[in-house]
Image (cartoon, rainbow, N blue to C red; front, top):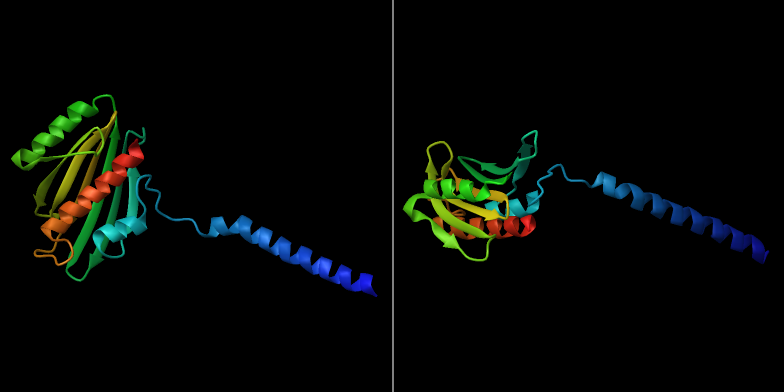
Length: 176
């Protein structure tokens, strides 16, 4: 009689352990993220933009340039985080060209990549924002956060600078 009860519990234990093992095997496949940006995920981008951001990744066929764009859209506004990374031997030259586009507003940033600078940007279609251009070895990165809303209560000029700087720290750290 004792052996019958023991075998009953042994069978149940095997069933439960099998169920857990199958769950652990298939669970990661069910929980994958749609965004494949190599440097930042949608949750982090959402925090930087102040809402629920949706991401999109595009790249060139030769994998020299990859662009991740995260957008949070609401009633009458659009917040966007755009990250572009180019790989090439002429990263230093490209950085100098992009730095000239920043004009005299460019401020060097310390401890971000090999070198980086931040500047304000305004575009009639995109709105106003902050941009960081920098370099990590042979990789040129651009981080742009902008808002279409004038006097944005979430992405003020100061908040744009802080959040763009934070994003650039993360991107450059991931490029090392």
